[in-house]
Image 1: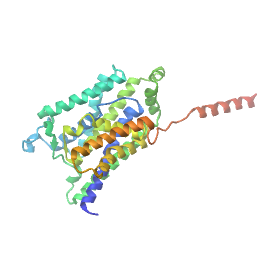
Image 2: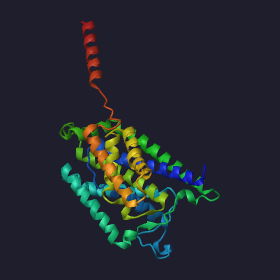
Image 3: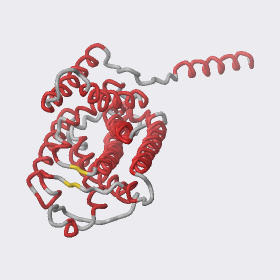
Image 4: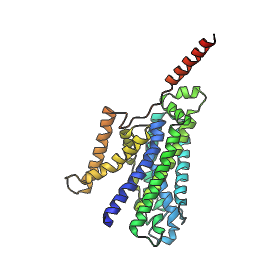
Length: 335
């Protein structure tokens, strides 16, 4: 297998892992709990910028062509951990402002406004993250290992992404299919009933908002380290709707379904468009990707709103009836 083919395959796998992790974070918020986070891409960008600043070193050492707020040269995995902490902290701040006082439709509008404002600020304030040029030369932790070929380093990073995706998947299953997950689905389906049982719906929404923000930041950190650069053009607000499409196509609340949706939408559509006989105009290709993504969203919302793999519903009524019947039988035998 040629070096170019290996790099192409490694790139596809990394993008799948990154988008699956991000889509799981949004699914925990939107699919499981019902939180409309239209600023989701903002938290991915926060993770990317944080990982870059924690691994690039001081801005003065970059030769003066990059300007950013802080600069450290921390070893792996501290930049990834720092990215998740910043993503979670930013989610907590925004969540405390929006989730406690606003109803869901207003929350969505506020999130969208925050995403647009954050992009403008990042482009305008050069000293924050190098303005519209963004950050480049972001170190890849696998490439710091000397004595290895470039292909081996790439596959080591692929292994890291796959391992993190599997760990996040296990954590997602543990959260969603636990008693805590039933509380989250209760918040989505009937908030008043959850409150009547003594659970705080606002607290549950804030918790998943923080967890989802941390996962988004992790996906952004991995992507920035792989491609070696990150700029405001990478996280314009429409990018959020790619993740929403992945959740809708895969199936809201379905962990396996969302993983399939993320692979199909975020990676499959992009690759399919590249091989269409429509020429090589990048503007046309980018426009076609958005057109297909939008049509796919509409088609699934209209014809199959449950997605490819619908959320698995656990039934408890039959067990309750069986237990009740057994109790009655024992009472009859006793009499």
